Length: 128
Figure: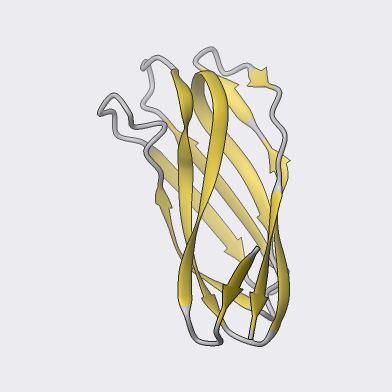
């Protein structure tokens, strides 16, 4: 649960726990666009833990409150294992209310581009 004042900016990490041979992480995050605005998306440390450059693609549908994110390691590189942040999202609290941030579609692909089971979670942001 996060408490934020109207006009404030804050960051939320999207973490992966227990990663095994992870190469790419495509996810869809839902948020309340009447309460929150996405300002920036950046890479977390997990996929770049061995110094590789991680490609980040994001598309924000700010009317519907749907954020599509994909972080991928370079072609030919091995997957990584462990725990850590995959994305860091910066939001602005734009109006009073409550917003649920939920990882709606959690995806993980290994170095062979095979899907690996993953489950999402959610957080609640209260703006006052």
